[in-house]
Image (cartoon, rainbow, N blue to C red; front, side, top):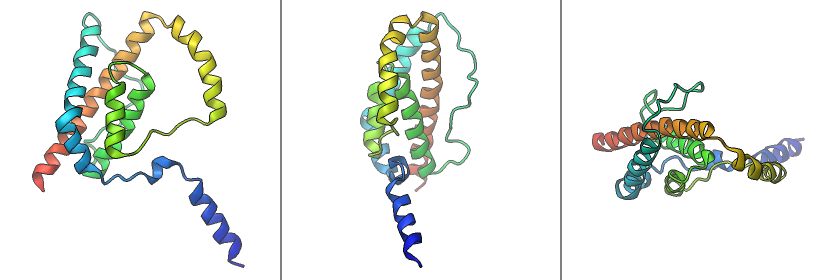
Amino acid sequence: KRWPLLCISLLALLFLPPSLSCDSSKANVLRENFRSVGKTLLDNAKKDINASLSALSCPSLKKKLPGCTANPNEANSVNTLLILACKIQNLDLPQTNLLAKTIQGSIDCPCPTKSPDRQHITSQGEKTRTRRMSGRKMNRKRCRAMAILQNMTQCNEILNSLSMDT
């Protein structure tokens, strides 16, 4: 009588998305990588995007980005940095791609991906969309990236301050 329940439980575990199985206790590795590489990448990305937005002011974002201040602990900071890295990677800006990959590599946790069927559909339309992308849309992407980078900076500072407390 217990076999069906056991089988269902095992199947559920098999199909959990990889993001749920990532180790969020990688704060030390992430902190060390940020000290050596990530902080430079973060500063360079902010500088590059600021330069491209120099004459523009960014409107406030409609969707609130995750931040690290609500629950400042190591696991929350690491998880939030991963979420922000995935969001900034989805913007597909050359100034931020390496930063996103560095954070994912430090945590050893990739961003969730779309299913292969869905990926094929979006890749066909992406060529047309890239060609037609107006300056206004690109500036919106840059504004969103700047907001994400500010939250990443905040998370990094919290992560570093937590390491000083211990």
